[in-house]
Image 1 (spheres, rainbow, N blue to C red):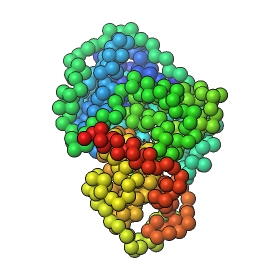
Image 2 (image 1 turned 180 degrees about the vertical axis):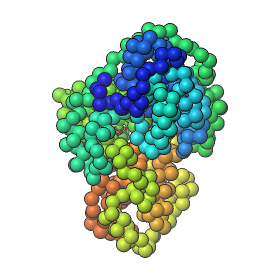
Image 3 (image 1 turned 60 degrees about the vertical axis):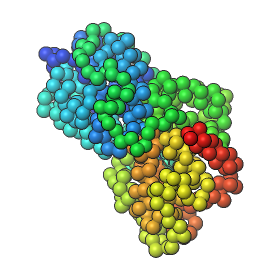
Image 4 (image 1 turned 135 degrees about the horizontal axis):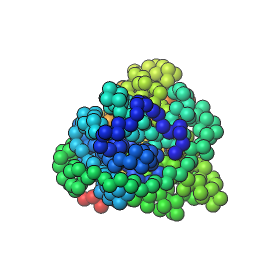
Length: 457
Ligand SMILES: Cc1cc2nc3c(=O)[nH]c(=O)nc-3n(C[C@H](O)[C@H](O)[C@H](O)COP(=O)(O)OP(=O)(O)OC[C@H]3O[C@@H](n4cnc5c(N)ncnc54)[C@H](O)[C@@H]3O)c2cc1C
């Protein structure tokens, strides 16, 4: 593993009188290409202590509902079995993250955890690290979810893709290392935990909000995600340069697997890059999204303090233009209920909502269109922002991700530029149905979404 992926928070000596090496797995829910698991196995071999991989289900996790939990839990049985096959204990606990991890810390020789980027997850880690310091338990944070580690890519909040891109491209090859896991030799502890329960009993214990239910279009887990990657590479990758067209359905749909760390971004990058001789333009266009756009989103939530508040999420020029048009009349106003019931006058917007509500996903181009329409149909920008973000995070399996906050802020000018001035939007980019009809065979997209509805009923 590249040394830049490791941050040492507490450098005390390993506590040999304690029971196990503790790896709290949260961001990287997988056995392949997982540098934190690799570090934990190596520590276990070096210290001759068993390895406990701790997975915590926090029932009070903000904005998490039945859809999110179901997708995540679907990945756990095979994760557990693979770890056991490597002589590693998989300990599943249920409770608030901080208290639960700290409970396991007291018996840890040393502590390893994976890095997070959004504020709530970073705060959680801050409290746990504080406890490790108080106990003099060595604590190491490992960066698993980005190709170029966040602070190596840049030390500040970047203005746009064009300012981050050269920094990433200069370094990317240094961080494409392959992580080959060894087997842990020490017999696992296998203390009783919830690990052997089934998905429905985990769900019962968490008791999540069921108003938005599991998507039947996406199944969670690293094996399913890796299969999805192979399918994408063999069937669609070489046409990816046309993937902007929602009618064509050419995107990878890997974002839910990336969000839960079920598929490694390094693995995706390497697999896609291996096709460069077959279809260079398509490969380059995919890697631009996976590397530049995605890492720009992580940069945004990591360095830009107010990334999730209307008042602080975008640039000054954008606030100025929004203020100048605050009193422009809105020709139509819709409510959240209208959106969820597919009850607007716009068939393309309604189709996008069907994709969101039924599948838990939405094509990237339609995410832009969808958000722009909600801006147009709300009495003010703040209400529009809050409505968009709450729908995004509730319905998308990949919601609550750095890409979520960045995608929504992009609607309000972040990482963008000023366009021709017009009503309501000022200089923010505007999108309309005529554009969809001109560029794409958008009726095909609408038909596909109508079929989803029929399948459901
Ligand atoms: C209003 C709005 C809201 C969004 N909300 C989310 C969200 O909640 N979660 C989420 O993961 N993405 C979000 N995005 C970004 C993007 O739409 C999705 O990442 C993409 O559609 C996921 O589908 P895919 O995996 O098939 O993408 P592909 O086209 O196959 O791309 C591959 C990967 O590249 C990355 N990527 C692609 N497009 C973008 C982008 N515009 N910005 C950053 N990374 C990108 C993603 O990790 C994606 O999985 C949002 C964009 C907008 C405009």
